[in-house]
Image (cartoon, rainbow, N blue to C red):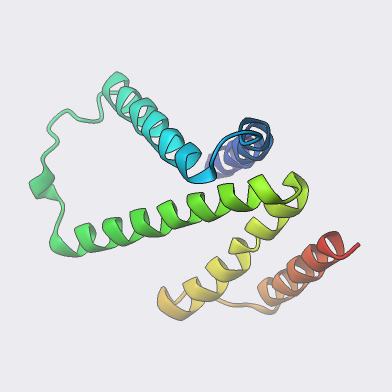
Length: 140
């Protein structure tokens, strides 16, 4: 099931690039990122309410370690969104999206380093091919 969710995420991310590029034509990227974040927060809260994800919810269920990493994740996400929209405003959507997806390379390397996830010859080959493909697209 996770592959279906991940595939849906990829399609939605593609729409972010296209809709974002069109929407940023005459708008400041920082302002657009803030508006986007507010709209996304509203959609997420409504979804959580609709699916009853707040039943029995308490902020006390989060430990200090969970809070720390959720805050760090939020900060990294906000920076990612902001830089993405600035890049999207200035560059071609396809190239920006491809370079943004280099995050996969960093996730695999950081997951091996910090989470102890396996780094096999297949994953290393995939990383090399991903970097090579990105370079081919960026430097036609």
